[in-house]
Image 1 (cartoon, rainbow, N blue to C red):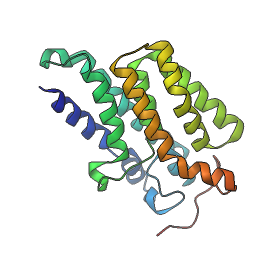
Image 2: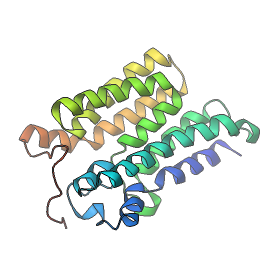
Image 3: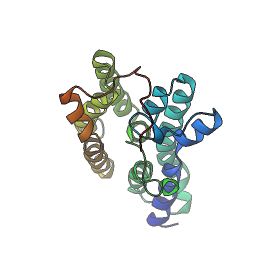
Image 4: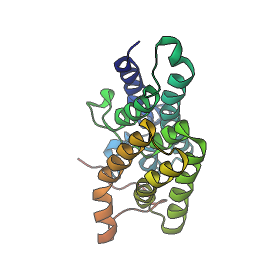
Length: 205
């Protein structure tokens, strides 16, 4: 199995839209029709169902971690090279952002990125998670926590990973995370960004 094969597998795994799956299982509205319109855990939470949001969060994180774990543990038997785990992690993250099952549109990637980082290095994942949780707890903006995590992730990666393909993958993930949340940052500055716990807005077009 080639590097391309591992990347395609990870991309397909990352493409699974757990926000959509969970919403259907719980009989909830399509998360793309309310709030931010983003198919992710934070927007599912705006629908008022904490359990559904929790399952979405776990599912999105698990697919990022699983993509890395499977390549690390079973890939060598199929010809995996050392860089393939890093490529798989990025491919899973990219799959969440541009899901094959949602016409190549997707979520912001925070939970999936966290799962990938945990797959790369436990301490890296914990450090970035702590930054995200601290910012969210203090400011109640999930998007601000994501931006802070994106900024600090490469710094923690340098400390815990050092160098190599995984470090490159972390930098790429961080850049895309920041870019995906640039509009949120503008809304925070304008005072129009919804906070954690806010209910869903009227349906969007």
